[in-house]
Length: 197
Image (cartoon, rainbow, N blue to C red; front, top):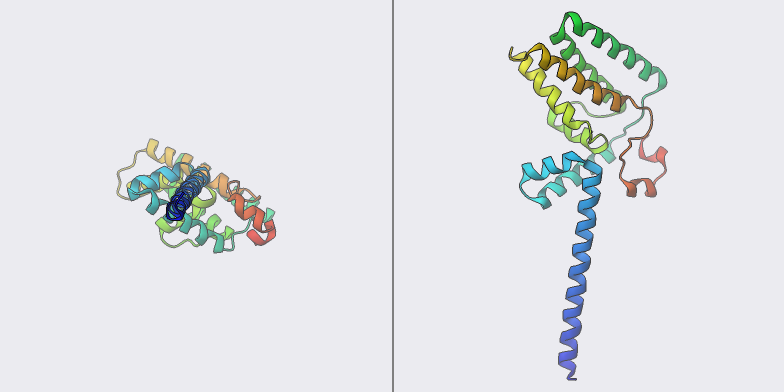
């Protein structure tokens, strides 16, 4: 066999193997992001219209949140927030709109106590989606109802639904353990104390 043909076959084999490795790594990355972000993955892909752009966005979110100094709540803070939440729920009977407004404010307080920046709503949602992907859709829905209420367009049933959505996020944020969906690679690289100080 001619050496030129041999080198050509070797080059083709290298390109094919490289392509298979690249494809396998991309599939693994996609699966990891799907598992980590849950329903938020599909929402971001649909919004971006491009899987690569969406995955880059999700990875950027994860890096941003990893750089934050997120922390679990102390037992006293958790108890204080739980008491505040019970008061908000009780208020709903007499003042549904006020209770929804208060629930939104309380979510912001819990997020701040955990170490999340609480500026722009879209940034808050993006940050929450990293460690709480299963309830971020609730946060969006509750906030939309709160905005409708501010315009005078929400019914009492809408407000009840907003409270249900806020409660799901509140319960998830109040947990005093590590976020349940932390990235597997992050857990292996660093001890828990270094991940969330």
